Amino acid sequence: MLASGAIALIGAVVTGVGLVGVLPSLFVLIASVGLIAPNAMALALGNARAAGSASALLGVLQIIIGVVAAPLVGLAGSGTAVPMAVTIAAFGIATLVTVVIVCRPGKIGAKVQ
Image (cartoon, rainbow, N blue to C red; front, side, top):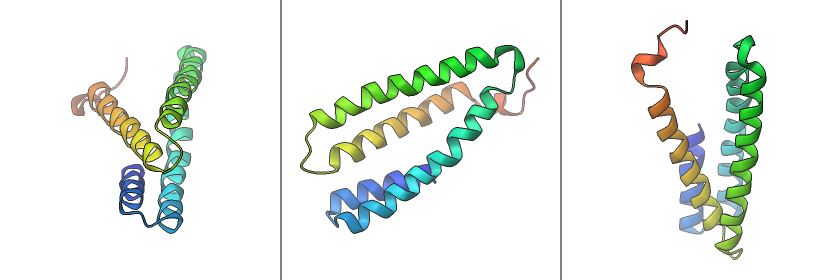
């Protein structure tokens, strides 16, 4: 859902369909983040011994990503939505790479000791 929203956003921005194309794709994108973020937080806080550290790490990462993303979008200009779409796509790709590196297929079914 996240990837389809990002692809739709890039398509809407590049083709220039305007607000009619950007708003639905942003809705799908933000709705998927609303589904993913609480579940990721619950999984991260599932281990009671490291719940405080996991919560702190997730909070700091959210702030750092916001601090990095906002100036990138602002520096690219405000005349079009292309900088926003490219930044969302770049962070989406970075997320995918992180998941592939951290959650290798063999590690998904493995139990944590």
